[in-house]
Each structure stands twice: as C-alpha cells, then as structure tokens.
Image 1: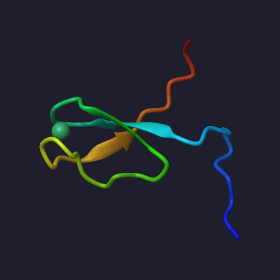
Image 2: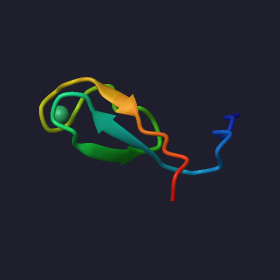
Image 3: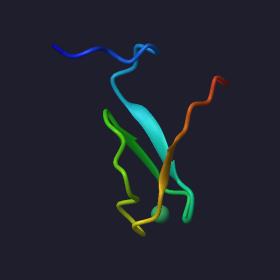
Length: 47
Ligand SMILES: [Zn+2]
C-alpha cells in the first residue's frame, strides 16, 4: 500500500538549487538531470 501526497497532486515540481531547472516528478529526483545539483521541493501556494 502507498500513501498519497497530502496535496493531492500526482506530480510535484522540484527546482535545482544550482541551475534553476524545473523537474516535475512523482518522487524527488535527488539530483538535477541537467547539472547534477541538489533539487528542492518547489511548493508554491500561489496561482
Ligand atoms: Zn541543475
């Protein structure tokens, strides 16, 4: 069994600290697919 993310979205946007690349994944990519840098969860309550 798997729990669903509390925000209800299937995909979450992650942003690279180093180059700012955005990756929409269901799970944290761990590292940037572009530069290999650290990714962070990009939770924006705006929009
Ligand atoms: Zn990057």
